[in-house]
Image (cartoon, rainbow, N blue to C red):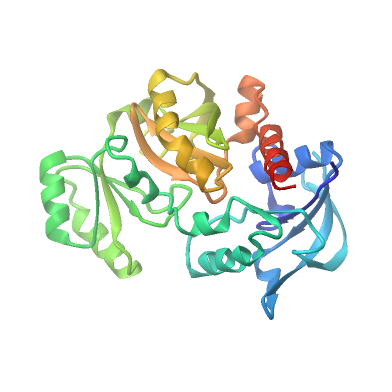
Length: 317
């Protein structure tokens, strides 16, 4: 079938054509003959309970500096004018993000929205893994300095990070005798009202932080993100490099544990982070790694995603 796709995303003009997953998803959609529109979250409106988007028909192209060609803006009725909406804007996972999810929930039962905004809103990427005991490194979520002090006393080196951050921003490795600890604690407390997350440092991160892509609850493949020398963060945004990697039996067992919940929640494209044998995050907002995985393995998760979309639409017809 020929589908009409609206993608809610950060500006397409700024994407990296060789790395951006949303670009790959649009490219795969166009290869199937689907029509694609894109719009920014700021251009989503709700009038009397009906959703509209100021959007442009978009044709992506692998041309450096010009990743897409656009037609004029139109006012799309997201209930009548499209078949699928992709919620793909990047975090931060703040009230603007949560509000966009609430609005897109109004399309439930009318237009397919993926990942399902109700469960994107209710599956924060660093809290969701807590539903699967035993998979995480020992993890503390708190603002209480006494709890953090006791946790550091037990584990020595720890990782401190914002509960709703992304892309490696604000992630710090704090050693057992780090003289900057007090300043870091003040910074976290002053900048955020939320609790923050403290985890036991996993030495295996030097070997890489594996990004596993799951499609509709099933593992598709993985890449290994290796931090640059002297860096505890392996995110590609902060200098980590992608390398080919195989899925281990431990990785597959993690996927078996979490896969049914992902499928049930309508979280069709998910990227999980695994260090050694521990799950650290379940990324459901705008997970990345699809293009790197295709280059290393030939597995096209973007096409697998659209296969899953087709199955979901067929099941509702």
